[in-house]
Amino acid sequence: MQIIIKEHINLGLIEPGISAYSSPGFLVRNHGEIKRGKPSKRAQIFQRKMDNLFKDYFEFMFVYIDDILIASKNMKEHIKHLEIFSDACHKEGLVLSEKKATIAVNKIEFLGILIDEAGIELQEHIVEKIRNFPDILKDKKQLQSFLGVVNFAGIFIKDLAKYRKDFRPLLKETESAKWKWEEIHTQRVRELKQVCNNLPKLAIPQEEDKLVVYTDANDYRWAAVLMRKTTTGEEPCRYTGGLFTEQQAKVWHINEKEFFAVWKAFKKWPLFLLAKEFTLKVDNTNVKAFLKNKLESKIEKARIIRWQAECQYYCYNIVVIKSHENVLADFLTRDGGL
Image: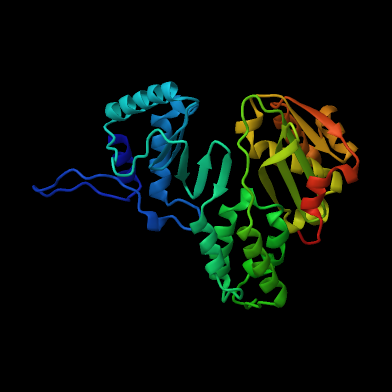
């Protein structure tokens, strides 16, 4: 705690008291300071300290500022994990709230997500926030707020980038470029609301699961989906995707965009992919060459060499499939509707 206080003083966030009546205080999170999913400076400092305190227990513990989730395979293991956590808190002088603690349950709400043995789903109050936005947004700030909540649900949404693409010009609004809301924007808001009303429940990959990653890209955006194999086929575990910048969309070759999609997918899911062998399915033969062949060291290709090097940390079998077989990824990146 003394380290945290000193760091706050150095940043000018607090200052030492000189009054004879000075008394100790507690550092707590101000929820109002966390806007659009980006923690405040003080929250970032606190997060860093919490990470350092519990870094040896990340195998079974997830820490987000002052919210802590402890996951165990069974009750015996859970009791052991709780004892370890309790001892660590006692050692560091951390005070826990008994009212906010939920212990030994199979279903829990955590950071807007409902988690149980079957998988994860978005909590209803997040969906309700999305529904409560008007179809016609009045300014850039309101659009940013809307997209901020939608982004929170991003792992559940197939090809979120498809909807975001039409909002990009509005997010660049300046004094010289006034706000111009059009019918396509209203349509996209309504589509996003409809999608969020029917979000899927996503599976949680288990140690014994065989995982499959599908990736794809087109001129303007990329997408990927993490699947796990079941006795009846495959079921989704996570979705991800994004838009290329205007420069990337204009300059990069489609092969480079396809490779970028693979690299981004790997970086998005290291928790699931780093520790086990999995299958990567793509419909572009050049991606396999990018991943497996030695590339020439040219300045203009430095980023591709870096992507290739980072992908080598993963153990996977790459399978090139026909475009019509890549139904999931192609479905994500088509310009048509859902």
